[in-house]
Image 1: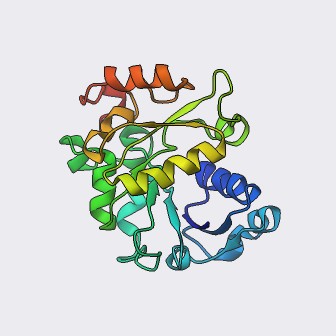
Image 2: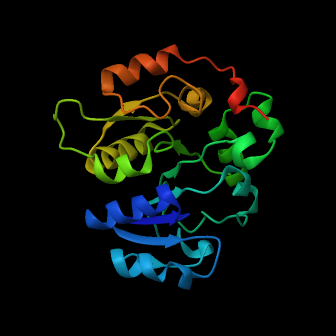
Length: 219
């Protein structure tokens, strides 16, 4: 697939490495000049581009930036992707640690619903709760005992199938976590967040989640 990645931090950079290893054609960007990604591009074979060009003709786009920076993305930044191409967002809201107060999220809007609204596209929430080193190193073949599972929230089944196949290709069991309206089940502070659970345990943890934000994850 042609994959565009906006954001080259721990998760975005890790996905650039893993997806190029798997043979995907990756265009990667950050908030600065593409030349700042020259080392990553040389290492991986990905093409470093301006953020406005990352989604061009993409079969799938990944947005992996600090939550507070989402409003800074250019309007229509994802419009050049192929029609119907899924958009994954990996973001988390860290009000005390990084992002400051985002009123809509504090008032109960799921983090990914807020991102989807700003980007003006449907999104799929995945890769937000796994430690980046585990994403890089702990993928295993399907059927491996103890294979780590990752939750995927999203509203459109066709797109979810594409995202699930990519998660499986990366070495993790995809678990349907419901709609974007239910994506609070995998936000920071919930039972599944940051855990390397298998599919059965992850399903249990998602079911145990509650929408109330705990003190650590409130502004």
